[in-house]
Image (cartoon, one colour):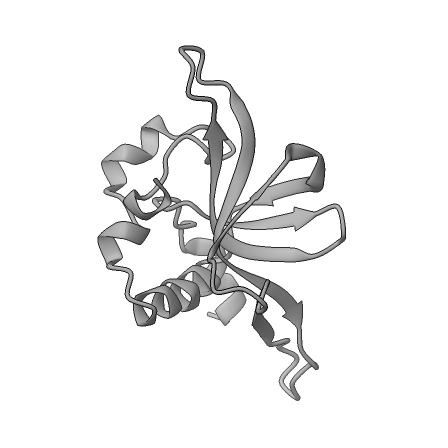
Length: 141
């Protein structure tokens, strides 16, 4: 069985708020993603937030045909790891590949986040909105 066939058979991990956000600038940002809601009774979505954002780019193709993914801090000019933006700046939000989730969660743990702040129990998966914005980790709060 090839690696590609194994990846197709492995279910996508969805018990997290890790997303790849494609911005209007064309950048693809890997982050813990969530919405920002108003503080009134209606709790309307007033924007979005990216926590611990990293820009994703493709490296040079390896001899075996694989293409490495490179991670770079999205905003290296500030120590702040939470960035808020309006919906007009977002083109799409998608779940990343399992390998990307594993690499990113390892990086977050190196930064001091605990696994329970990155992942939530599988049983909560059913309450998640299709875009993944309803369920957030404790760290995203």
